Length: 502
Length: 92
Image (cartoon, rainbow over all chains, first blue to last red; front, side):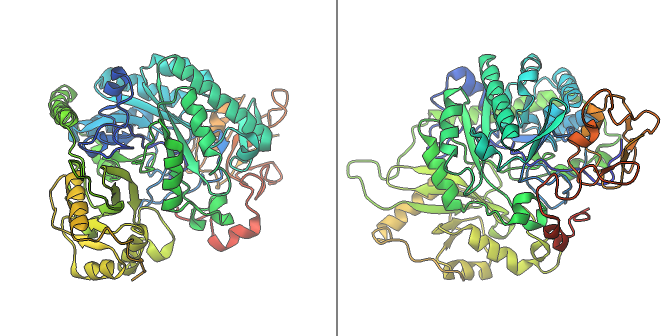
């Protein structure tokens, strides 16, 4: 089967998930999933999508073997493919199961930090059961050290729950945007069910019923379930708090609320009809409200269905079929090397976990200061190691008088917003900096390894202080140190300077 | 009596799985319904299955060239909204 131009896109959000430090800061801070039983913790501690901490060190890949879908979401356009896009449902190269195995082995050998193989689309994996399970079956046999996970809209989950458990797939992500059919009818125009295309409230009712049943069945079988929700302002934003409570009560171990991505150029219903996505402040507020005592994940990067590498990076093009053609992989040898690398990272993380965290301002006299948001440019490893101009996303941390906590990430230009900012065009330089300034709104400091003269001035003018003094230092310690400096110099007594666009 | 898949097909496989007659082949550049095998699902289902799951408006037509899923019927996007963005060919 040839795909001359590639199908595309059920924008599903499978990518990230987080165990790590969602509610307490990452790196050396205690794990947000520390409330979980040890057995589950061990299962997710090296999964970059489930563990905020792990995502600094471990990598994942998706293989796009599942083109068919059985529902339509209003944030998805099945015709879209662009190499410069990074968002769920978009792929550049559809793979046959045997090609997917070859690619996985090649990546696993070349990137020893790779721990997880996911099937996430570009359609729905469970609408392509033969291709999906053939891939899992072969991989479990040939690469037993790789964790398998799958992401689904949930429509056919009850039908395949047994098979998922049988293939030792221990991580499943279900995209649940609502539990009320009336709301669902505004998100899903139709589903294919029982040999018919069903529309409206009836379609949403069936989908919701199947999702909830599938969730219950997986939890009963001991499969780890994460729930993804797309936050759509005015449609399901207020409702997601209820979703969060319900899926948690049913045993989902993690809830990931992601922002709607909607641009007219994507040709999605929401994009064309002008439905807006949430602002970063709205997203953060909802994530905080949903949090309660449940782990929320905030480091999801909404990756493509064929992403390869650390979260937020995509090395897919390095491992295209023509590049791995004829490559012989000695997987036995690769496994030995992989094990050594994993053990080293795990030991490092374990050491960090044992270390008591030095709280900012802890001590006899607790100093008071307001919380400050800081953006960090990093390529991974939990240190500040990226040049400002190279950063395509920033991690955002909040420092206050208690601790440093990871809030989320801000992308600059990872997805297409039309010709004006398309990397294929030569005119992008100026607009990327503009977009970065917009993306960093609310942050008072940006920490990076280095920064150029021009962006320095623009950032300062916009009320964001650039800081290159903590290059190569651990993120949390640097953020805490900068917060203390700000406190000592009296900057935290006053409210933040009003930010203005440069 | 047979349905036809045209150039709008994205090759997503959805119809392959649901055809009761195994009449659909994954040809390049787009899929093909073998006319001798296609019954339009008469006798098996109330609706032609390929057209019931196909996500692409206009990609499946009858012998007269009439789309079983006309523009606007699946995404809900009014056709006049589509024009400015040239979506059919966008980013291909």
